[in-house]
Length: 262
Image (cartoon, rainbow, N blue to C red; front, side, top):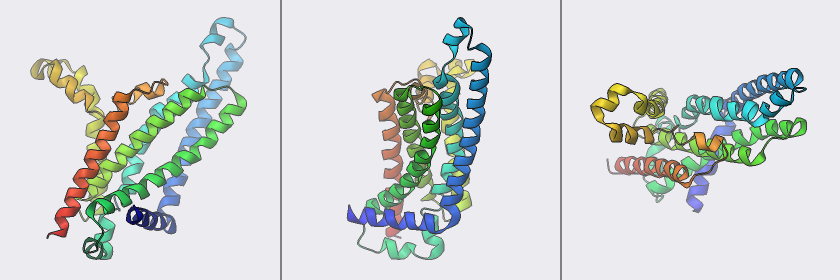
């Protein structure tokens, strides 16, 4: 455990010594903050226009019109683009700096290397999500959001982002090129994202069958996310994301382990 934490601290120091982490954090908070302000202004305008009408007043919901469109729609897409930028350097950077051989020949196991690097990236993502809590604090002061739904949304975003990081780390183990690692990660995540539309294709349903298309749709990283946006924490969805994380880290560990024997 000490070795994992040491590697994680090393990764965090690398992130925050360079401008990369600050740039990613600033871009995330700026774009999410702008989207939050636009959603909040639109909601406030609707309250001014329709607030006096009892029928429309019942339709006004800050969770549905501000929080859910932001963290349930925009943020996952943004993380798909942003998180591969965090993971693309995790393993290729060691090879570029010439420290890969030093790490691989050390008494640290491949599992500790992978978990340490993953933990470092995960902490960066938690800092990003933690920064966005300021927007929820502002929202709580001007309205009454359902905090249970907000907590469920944050759990869903965290699990989704953790899956993105695990997949990105896994793919970065296959190449020495950071740009290629980024492209591979984004491409793979897009494929896993759009698998959710397989079951809606009539031609695929006819050629593959409903069970096969349903199975492929269940592999989609976004198919298991909508329930979190509704305040529903289903153990099936949690198990799916944890399975993606464990499988990706296992493959990354095996690839790193194979490098030690070359």
